[in-house]
Length: 243
Image (cartoon, rainbow, N blue to C red; front, side):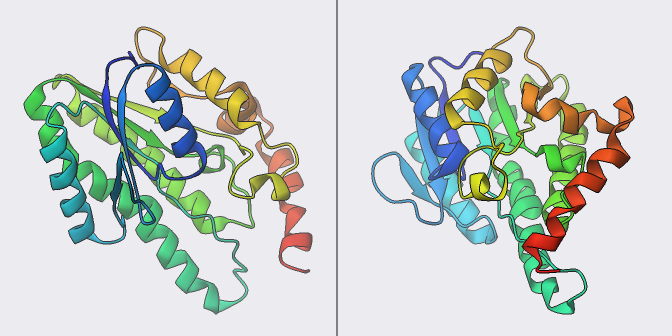
C-alpha cells in the first residue's frame, strides 16, 4: 500500500494510535482528516460512531471537502473492564458493541459506495491481538474485535475485483490511553508504527498487519500455546476486579 499522496479519513484519529498514524501519513505526504467525538479544528471532523446520523454528516462533510478520498481507516473503540458476575456490566457491553463493532460497520457502509465508484482505494480496519487470544478482564472488547476480524474477512471477499483493498491491523498492547498502566510490556508507539508502516507498504499489500509483539496472540491456537497464555492472562482478574 502506498502511503504517500493519499487522501485519508481516520475515524478515531484524535488520540492514541489514530492520532500518531495521522502524523505519520502527513509526514509521508498524504492529506489526512481525523474524526472523533472531541474533534475540532483544522483537519478534524466531529463524528460519533454510535450515531448513524453523525456518521452520515461526517461522510458528507469529508467528501465535500475531499472528493478524492481514497483511504478510510476505522479505529474508534473503547476498552471496558467488566465483571461478568455482576449483571450491571451489560451496559458497558452494549456500549462496546455499539462503538467497536457497529461503529466500524456503519463507517464502512458510509464510505464504501464512494470508494467503489472511484474504482480504487483502501480500507484499513483495526482489530486487536485480543480478538485471537482473549484478555478475560475485557470480554466484550475481545468479542467485538473478533467480530471486526470476521467482518473484515467477509468484506475483503465481497470487495474483490472492485479495486478497493481491505487490510486488517492487529495491534498488541500499545503504550497509549493508559494501556501501559495495565500492561507494562505495552509496545512503545513509535516502535509500533515503525513496524506497521514497514509491513503495510509491502507489495502486494498484506491482508493483515501483525507486528512481532502481536504474533504470539494472533497465532496462539495454531502454535499450541493458547491454553497456557489464557491462564496467564486470567491472573489479571484478581487485580483488576478485586478478587
